[in-house]
Amino acid sequence: MKEIKAYIRGERAAKVQAALSEAGISHMTLSHVLAVGAHNDADQAKASIEFGCYVNRRVKVEVICLDKDEARTVELVRKAACTGQPGDGIITVTNVNHLIKIRTAAESVEAL
Image 1 (cartoon, rainbow, N blue to C red):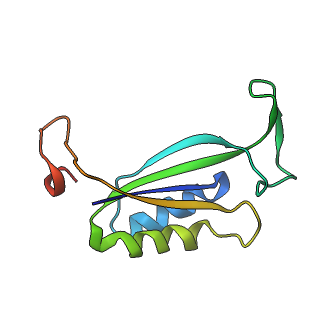
Image 2 (image 1 turned 90 degrees about the vertical axis):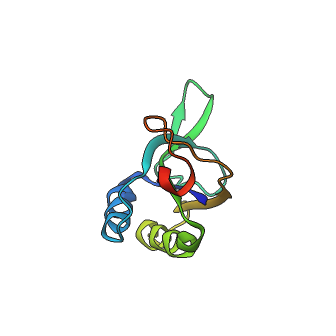
């Protein structure tokens, strides 16, 4: 199994969620995050008193999928999140070694 994380513009979150849902991927996590870096959108950067630097608000999308669905899921996220502008975000893919559903104790594929 794979865990796919995408750090995207907040205004693209609904489009990414809709694209994944249309493809039958209904379980995901969305979180607000603050991004710092050279590829951020300077027009939207805000000074953060808490962190003492300029930050851009982003949304982190997290999806766990089967290995066979990795490429399709990544491409769905990439297309839906893309505006063609700097600061569109990044996608990471990592291996999931063990997955356990808390309520039922189901493991691996059964836990999805």
